[in-house]
Image 1 (spheres, rainbow, N blue to C red):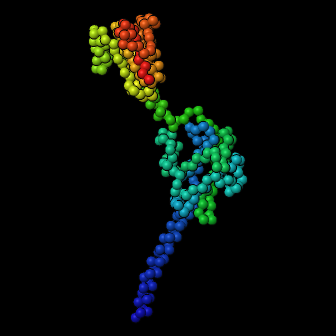
Image 2: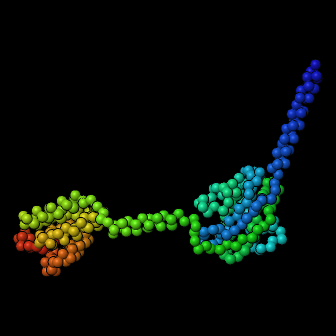
Length: 303
């Protein structure tokens, strides 16, 4: 009884085992190594020279167990490709065109193609204008299949087409600027008046009516602070108005560099407003002297 059961079990297992062996053998037959197909090599576009790009089609055996080798030869006619120098080796499921940093408008092939770029360094020296032989080998264990070598010559390029988007943006921005300038010349453009500047003009007028000097503060910071720079720019406009109205202007500051900048800005503004050099003074005037400086520009330098 036990022998019959064993025989029936063996009879049931044997066809399954045969089918499994046939399927495994067919899988290995389908993934057997073959030389890489559609191998191409050319000068890397949009570069400064000293670089070559290699492309080839994907294969059914592309997996981590299989590796690709990139071989380089300095002779255009290579009698034995196996003797060429191995300059790179990596798993067969890596280095695709879709993984590269090329923009879509300069990609030389579809994303599923294999791609490798040879550059100077790490034992590789590519001279511009020199032809090289390049091939790719598929390796698994002790089996090695080498494709037919192809030739390519590195050379520098005048235009970097990868940066074409920056050129288009620059042209677009320039076109907008020139259009805005042309539009401004043809018609009047409304510019909203800043309320703060209107208040400054009103304060200058009140000080002139009362006969009081104007105290202008640029803040306690030095010229590296943005607020001080902005205050110095506005000082030029205020100085022109005070010079035109004949009002005293007092500009104190603790920093000597900022003080010197304010002096030059105010002096230039006063001269542009029609003032005479004799009406420009610097120093630490007393209260009596300040009252007698009618229509002059005054600076208080507090240290």
